[in-house]
Image (cartoon, rainbow, N blue to C red; front, side):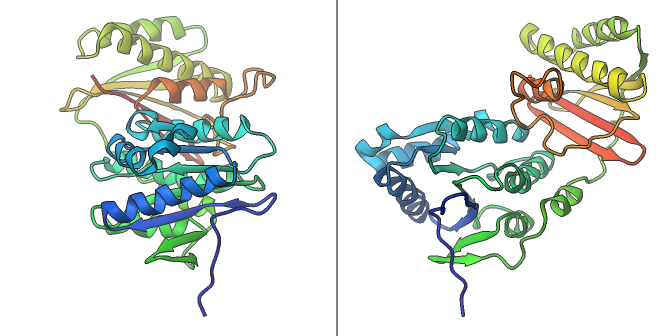
Length: 315
């Protein structure tokens, strides 16, 4: 017998289905139908998908589109580490109501590094929204995405919508298992400038970064963003990573600037930086959250021996 689920949450329930689709027509009818059902139930609806899909959904919804919040996921989710905060902010704006959200964090053309962080995001949604009354529907194009991406979607979503059926996913696993699998070894750069830093020398480290960035293709604003992100990361190292650390800087063949910060710290909370810190939380988590907002991609590797952050900014 097939186990069935519903995309409409009960009170206090969180529903997180993956929608596997094969055609544009199936996409707009399934996603559009989900959104229209939310509007008919007078539930808040937020749709964050790539721009081309936004246009198709607006056309399908017609006048109903006026009641929906939309975001281009290629902008919002360029860094997958930013998505979760945006979804939570939307849900928090509607306390006591069952938010209905569409989030499409992975599409054809995503790099391997981006896809890993987006997969980590999909797993952590289950932790962040546990016990909340909400539904987050995540579309996956099974005709263009790699088989591994689709297989991971089965592991990160408790429920599936496939071939017109709502199913319980037998492959679903604890988010911690998926996050551990996303911690693939980071590739080594061909050449990198390396600086050691310690308490009392962060200003000098910042100047090294500023001088190096002058030789990259980043404009002044983007250079400032990366310097600020480096400053936050190295300050965290001094405060929580044993007072010292290593900064490495390099560019890719496509001109992306990368800063890597290594120290002896640990990451106790896998959601750190992915949730918007409360105004009353002091400085806890603010630095990593700011880093996610500034960078195009943030890769984090936490091991028993230390913590590594790789910060990417494209020209």
